[in-house]
Length: 385
Image (tube, rainbow, N blue to C red):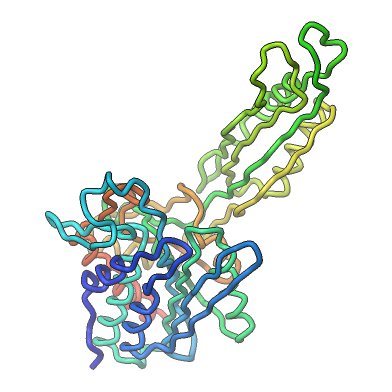
């Protein structure tokens, strides 16, 4: 019989590793030891790329047949920030009044520990002949530039002839209470940068200059004159937010030669990065003049329509918490934006109220309940295959 793991103990061991992205600080060693004790074959996948930090990753698999149920997550965490503002050691994994404190407690070391503990309980009850495979795809690059993590791990899997049938991502999805929300998609995200160039001159002689500021403002007005859309069945309306307008002109009697603006677009599945880039180009061309438009697309919008995977997660969450989870696409981006290209994906984890904040924490009861939910997800999935 497989020995079972305690999700709280493993959570604390992971939090004690100061794995601020891209440093691993031993977190993957802790996880690998736990998984190997359950019989997983573990492969470390360090990746590098010019201009980015080296990142270590872990792929672990139990079983060789299909279907392959994958859990994806990340052991890297964001920086502590103002350490003096913390009331506890950010990497001390302190327990206080029924809550576990530390960087990564919400996002998302505890979820990794919960799934690992859930597997141990599942194997203890079912044995290793459960009718498929269980795998973990764990990166150290989710909070970083996300170039040496999940993307390259998925390519490696393809090169190895391995496939994922479904994937559960353990991001903190619940706004306030465990069981409130499952993510079945995410909005896309694009940053855009406009630089308008004119001719510097004296404000008393505007005919000898070309002021770029009015043209930049006209472009921004054209871009934002109408809503991008009214939303869809599963997505809220797309939104465009101007984040900065810069001229850098300290003089009051000088017409500047350049003006710049930056904005971010969070878009639903009525758009693609390419279609929005063309829209922005058309708006800028309608004003004309000398300008440069550059866009960076960090992720496309995607949706896994409600189906078997989200249904199994919802049933498990409802059984444990008594709440019926909302199927949502709100929030920022996650590595699910890469995984959706290879299999159906849904996200469910702890609450996100303290993620990335000072004194990040999760309720001990939630940690134990999430492990039970994950075990029931495995039971529901392999009971239907």
